[in-house]
Amino acid sequence: MYVLFMPLVAAALLIYPEYFVDRFSPISSLTGDPLLGVGVWRFFGYFVLLISWGLIELFRQ
Image 1 (tube, rainbow, N blue to C red):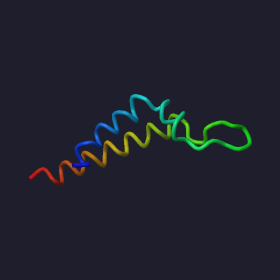
Image 2: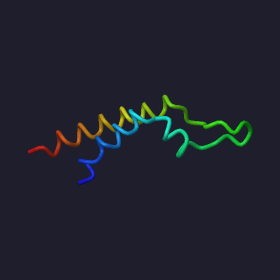
Image 3: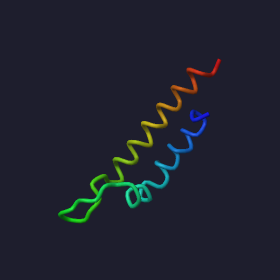
C-alpha cells in the first residue's frame, strides 16, 4: 500500500520543496538558517520517485 503513496510524496517534494525546507529542515544554531536547502529536498523527491518506480515495476505482476 505504501508503494502507491510514494509517487505522491515524490511529487510533493518536487513541487513544494520550500515547504519541506521550512518545516523539516534542521536549523543551524549559529546562523538560524536551514541546513538542508531546496536542492536537497528536490534530490530526495527524485530519489523517492526512482525508488517508487522500481517498487511498482517489481510488484507489478
